Length: 391
View 1 (cartoon, rainbow, N blue to C red):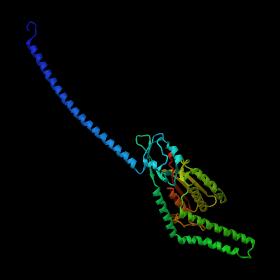
View 2: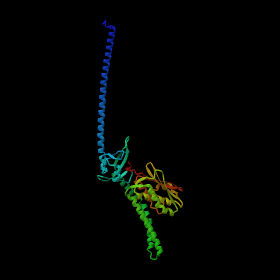
View 3: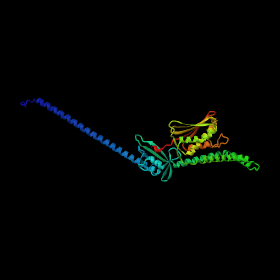
């Protein structure tokens, strides 16, 4: 050993260092084994949690699928192109011929018809024609839409029956007023008829009494038709009505009468309201507007201007008829829409009541703002037609 020139002390020191390094390596390996065991345990726990979460999600998915299958309401899912990608059995029952892959716009055009109310549609179902409500909701963080469909036919029938009973109750309460409304023109017509029966009556007087008698009978006919319209409240076909075109038509219809009274009518359309569409019966809604215009004309004087305006507020289309006439007291305004209440000499007292009932059936309303001596404004508010073809 001495011949190799190796110092025994250095060799002993080297062995000591090697032994120390071996011990440290053993300790490190033992620590690594413990960490591996700990990580394995943690991984097992994590895998167990994931398996449990997967099982819970699978169970939730099964419950949701079962819920959609058993749900009495319909659910339809559309992708961003407006294509039906999923629907539950209830939706299939309520909407005949609904198919996966169908373009919703085309389905609406071919199979659904707008009904009398906001978001209400007539649908051909397995058990016949039904009224359904369609509510559209955007899906968070998605580009598609979810539509909730409810069959409201039974509720609609009950509501219609309740409305009918209310009308009949009002008719009962107003029986005395009804008798008076009929008796006055009838008595006048009988008086004129008695004059016509006189043999000595000359031809010019006969024609005069005949015309007056005919006018009273026509007044009776209008009164009876108004009462029948008020009591029955019958359904009429609904359609998409473009309001600007309807107001232009009403303006043209009233033009001859306005000219004869030396009055004028202007139409004001606020920005964003020129293409408003509502669900209504065009003939009935046109009658409402012309009724209000006729009232405005009767309350005005020569040279006055009647203004029609169209705007939109909070999803409601607003049609306003404003005059510069005599105005009304608060007492009159409070009773204005009561059946048989009128301030006109020959009024039936049913015109505004019929208008109010019609707008209620359409999910809308009518309001009045008036002051004595400064004119009146009547505002019709109707829900803007939701058009699923825009989905």
